[in-house]
Length: 111
Image (cartoon, rainbow, N blue to C red; front, side):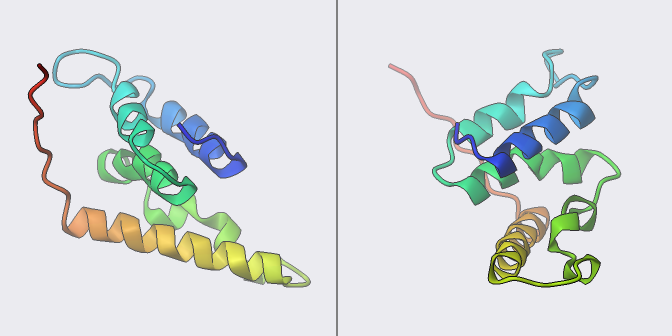
C-alpha cells in the first residue's frame, strides 16, 4: 500500500462508506478495495482503487470526491494548486473510464 495524505483520505472515505457492507461471501466489503489498492504502484492508482467502488456502489459521484480541484474557492491560485487540480482531473478520468469500461479480472492459479 502506498501511504500519502491523499491515499490516507481515500482509505478513510472508503472505510466510512463501505464499513457496513459485505461482499457476496459475507466478508466485510472494505477488504476488496483494500486488496485492489495493494496491487497499485503509485498514488493516483492507489487512490482510484480505494474509491472505485465508492462511485460504483454508493450515491457518491466522482465530482463529490474532488472538492480540492475547485480552484474557485481559493483567493489566490498557486502552481501547486494547479498541479493538484490536474492530478485530480486525471483521477476523475480514470474513474469515469472504469465506470464505462471496467477491467476484466483474471483468476490466477496458485501452485
